[in-house]
Length: 159
Length: 159
Figure 1 (cartoon, rainbow over the protein chains, first blue to last red):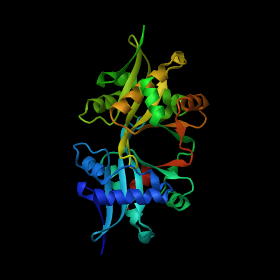
Figure 2: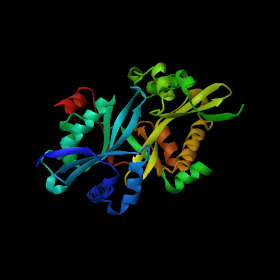
Figure 3: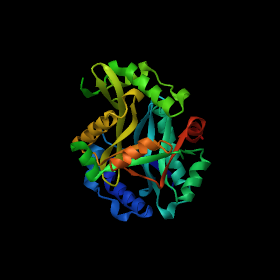
Figure 4: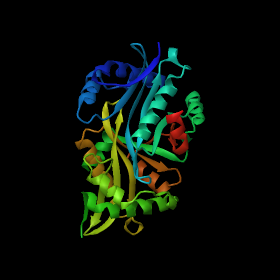
């Protein structure tokens, strides 16, 4: 059967949750997933979903997913496409599934007038880094992302 | 006069453009700004603006800005607030303008049910890094952002 790529809808919430959990385990943070299928379904059905998602399938078997949203470049004056999660199940790797997902994202990005695609990679994930470099992606090596959450975020908001 | 923080609208496009250019110069990329006041005004007036912006003012004098949009955390199942640009004019620094902008962003993030705030910092910008660490922000040191744009993006989309 042929590989197909399609946009996910609310009925795919369980599939997406399974992928999110498998990716968290691969990233060595299996306990980090707090979300649920009900939350994902509600967000996907909302008038302005906070994310979009592509599924790679062969027949009815989901092999991988790409979850994304739009960011914005002030220098370019245009939106960008930010890829939050990309994952292909181990038994389906090395057969072009990840590339097919990235190609469809690149097509969408150009169709929507985006200046670029961006995503974050764990520094120990050498197979992924090699793959991205081969596509012509460039690491933003001199930038570090900072995060503020939990008690620190509350304190800043309320102090 | 007291410092006020307010949301920017389409009439603030010239002010925002000036801040974007000053920040690009501070980041040693003065030639990188391709956008225009017309583009910013059009985007701010659109039904779904691709960004939002806070302005810090004393009277009618704009002293700094914070430009942001929403990202999404799959693990938390909630949106986040991503701060794309934060800038305070040199003559107004060290008087709490940046902190006032960050506090208002933190307040907005909590009001909107965001899991966190995130932003990227240039590794040589030690004054900024020290300031963020003092607020309790954590550097995501093991992640690197990859970017695909221009000819490489076109090739991936079309090949």
